[in-house]
Every structure is written in C-alpha cells, then in structure tokens.
Image 1 (cartoon, protein in one colour):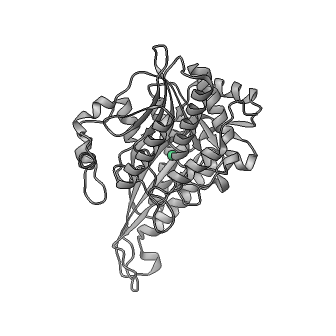
Image 2 (image 1 turned 90 degrees about the vertical axis):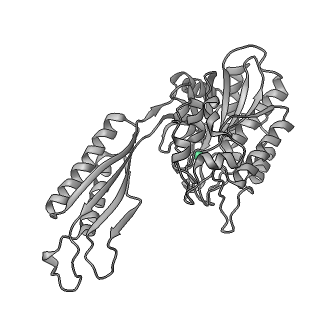
Image 3 (image 1 turned 60 degrees about the vertical axis):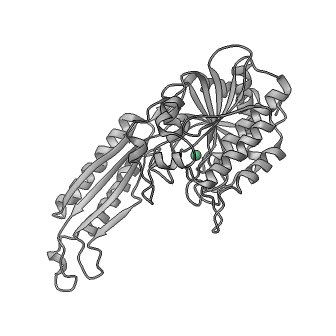
Length: 410
Ligand SMILES: [Zn+2]
C-alpha cells in the first residue's frame, strides 16, 4: 500500500542519471570526495533540489542541504545519505538515500504543502573513504569533531591533503567548524542493505536496530629469512606459514562466536618477498565486527589469543595491535518504534535487523536521534558495478520514509 504515490519512474530515472556521473571505462563509478565527478554529482542533486522548489545550500565541507522550511521553529527533520562512492562502485550505495529523501520530500510538499518542522535532504560529501582515509568527513563535520590538524595531515594516494583538495574547489578548511549543526531533531537514512538477508528472506524493508561495532587490528609476524633450497623444512621459522595458521584461527574464532560475529583478513604483505626465500616478516589486517560491545571485546581477545598461540607453537614473533575500535551504535529506539508501527500500518513485510556496515546514520546518532531503512540488494552485491535493486523493491522503502517524515514534520 502506498498512500503517497511515490513515482517509481522518477526514482528510476534519477538512479540512472546520477549513476552516469563518475562512470569509469571498466563500468563502475568513482566519485571520490572533491574530485570533478564528485562536484558534477553534487551539481545534479542541487539542480534536482531547485527544480523541486527546495532551498539549496552547502556547508563548509561541501555537504549539500536541500531545505523545505517549516512554518514553526524547532530542530529540522533530516533525511539523506552520501554522494561519494568507492572506486569502481555502484549506482545505489549512498546515491539511493539522497534520491529517496528528495523524492519523499518532493511528494510530501506536493500533497501537503509546507511542513510545520523544516525538512532537509542531506547529501553528505564523504562516507566511503575511497580517496582519503577521512572517516566520514561529512558527518564528522556536522558533528563538529574534525580536529584542526586533519585537513593538512590526511593525504590521498597522490600526496594531496584533504585541505588542499578542498581549497582547489573553493572550500576553506579554516571554516570547517561552521559546518557543525546542533538543530537536527531526527535523521533517517535509507540505504541499500549491501548484504543478502532481505532478498533471501523475502522482506521488503529492513529497519536497522544497531550498526555493528568494528575493531581493526594489524598483526605483524616475525620469523627468519633463509634459503628456500638449503633450509630443511623442520629447521624453518616461516612467518608466512605462521600467518596462514593465524588467518585460519581468526576464521575459527568468528565461527565459534556465531552470527552476527564476523572477522576478515583482507590484506597481507610478506617480506622480503622473494620466491626463493623463506618469508621473514608478514603483516596482515584483521577486521572484527559484532553488534554487541562485550561480544566484540571477547572476540577481539579470542582472536589475539589464538594468534599468540600460533606464534608460540611456531617459534615466531608477533606484534598484535588494535588500530581502531568503533563500538556498536544502537539506533534511536523511538524512531525505530515509529518505523515499525508505520511499516505495519502500511502492510509492508519488514525485518528488524542489524547493519554490518558503517553509515552516516551511525555517526550522526552520536548527537541526534537517527534511524535507518534498508531496501534489498540483489545477490547482496555492493561496492561493485553489479550493485542493483529493481525500482519496485525501492519504492516500499521510500513509502516508509515518506510516512516517517510526514509523521515527524507535519
Ligand atoms: Zn553507503
């Protein structure tokens, strides 16, 4: 049931239009923050906003704010997502949340006129960290937690600082603190699930309960470099063989913890890296996630213990370091309840579920009531040109979003 008449054709057209901006020869998209493609994508969204009769503004870091002013004072009701993409990414990650928010606000404006509370569609400038390791630059600017040294110290692969990249597009890094907002009453982000759960279970929308916690660790294993031909098998201290055992132990630890625990080794380097040399030193990353903070710590400890055990058994050195740790973020209980009630009333098949990926909403939830709506991802694919959600699987999510914005703002 769709009491708002969400226009599927408009949504589909917008996905295609924005999905052309930043297209690479190999088929995927790349809209790293402060690149020409990123600027072009913002121009498209700003033009849509103007055509919809919204006030178009930008803040000091380049977050776009499309505003439908309310008739009464009070904190704004905000919806949206990020406009940047990973390298060789798809058309839906981030972009769909902006398109959904704009379409919902446009429909509400046409049917109900001006809201009591100001409605805003937000396109955050950076979430995916593809160009800079800037860790949600857009949301952190809104929270006012970007440290003064960051603009000069965060570099891209070419050695350009994020501050310099800003200046090249006319943004002044000294003004970043001005992007801070304290007047947001609610933030609701629609996003593709980026996993297979909704599609597999046949649910139309997901209502996110908690955004998973994430610990990033780095393990460095030290053995001894020896000649690959002259050193007998039982006389070796092979760092790479040790690392291989550790990687299997990481997997076992996550399996033993059970869902939703996950642990991944995604990057490994070996030195000296000769085909005829027993590896002396190996470094690999470990990405550990859980939706419960205690369980996350427990898994982290279990992984570290397992790696140390292997190091002892193989007579290897081990330096195990936790590089960063973000605790799980529960989303706002009242907003979640509202979404559950509305989804039930709309007759939607919904599932309350955790998010295994980080999102703008998880950061904005540190200061503002925040919620998330997931729509299905075909085959669970994301961060890939194969990202796809048919429009008929998108509109139920936008209907729910529109219903929530209507309830909160009118
Ligand atoms: Zn995203």
